[in-house]
Length: 116
Length: 109
Image (cartoon, rainbow over all chains, first blue to last red; front, side):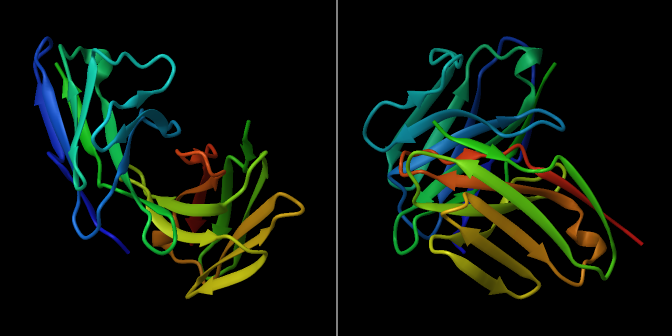
């Protein structure tokens, strides 16, 4: 299957700082990528849809000014958690939509964020 | 809107066969995905069914009945490493995918 990478795999930061997470589709182009958040033992929660060359579409209840998404190329989307607080500590997972052949979403390995 | 139901937890014995069911309601349907997610890791793609019937891929098979709004994932010759959550996800044609809450499978010796 297609490969999606995320960087960093884990990050620990102080409260009030900003953290940027990168999501890359390595062997296909993705006009659409998705950002999810998952708390322990809970379901995936979609945060936003990242569209190449246009603004992201945020799910209800997700603050767009706090979670900045940039999809500047067909292989890269970034999520920046601004002014992070301990309640933002979670597992952030991106996925990329591969529309060649079967329309499938492939997930990155996730980024574990801990805010102290 | 869309709605997906799958059992919350299942337990099965090593070497056995287990079937994880998923029922859904949707106004539009393009296909149905199954993903596997181990604890602390991101989901990995298992299968995608677009047409009715059974698709086999090694020890894993996935079945779809569009008229019944029903799918199942069949795992054969269960191994301890198959202990994970299994997510059913609906492609209704409107991105993004709609995920079920997942079925946590425990494989015991």
